[in-house]
Image (cartoon, helix red, strand yellow):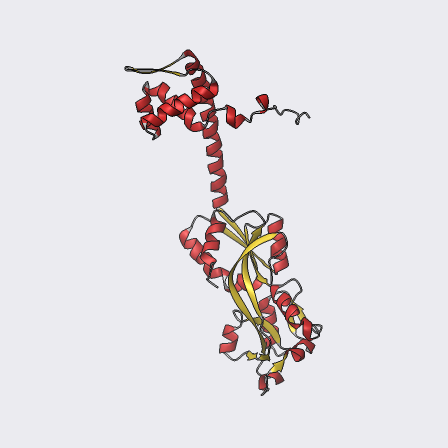
Length: 314
């Protein structure tokens, strides 16, 4: 079967990598041509003279021609060696251009970081991590998208983010991830709400049957709550469904209805008694906080650096 147009079939079916000397051997040959001595060429390329001799002999066997005449007065290229050296110079120059281009790509990658995070992590954890990253990599420009876990996954899969953070029970489809911490969800209500004056714990069935102020479907908070209350009749239709933790918290403080929020998000309100935690018998709402990225694409550059800063920080 013929290959695609413009493709050249390997000679005798042998891959090019087995027929052409490697860059190290070509650089050594160029050093011999420049310095006139195998010993000096060995020192210039950082290897021993026996290793240099072995590499030249191996290259001669590979190409099937003699490249260097050795004598007590030094090393001289054969006629074939002069020709091969000219070709080698062009190969090494092309490799140097390739390396310069790769360095430019790395520099462009390392100059920016696009982060997508679910709301709780974006509001209460990422600011501290990004301050630490800024101190260590001041030249990196960071952009942050905050949304629910589904929106974070969509951004990563579309190539619009380099690293994501989500809360929930599992890793979204198409992504790999690592747990960086855990978060507890708690039921909260305004001090004037009847639940705040209860003497006995709320039951899971009572919580499930009560219209609450909740985050929207697709959020990590909602995913955990739906799963935990499924065996207790499932969640009642929410009184309000809001797209940000701040909005949910404000509605709960205004005495509209109780809510379920991350413990990270309500510390200030609990301390000031603007909200009260409501114990629920036999219900433990814990979720993993994860860093996520597209399957098979490990974080690199500043994304990898940020991931290192977050490990265990939550």
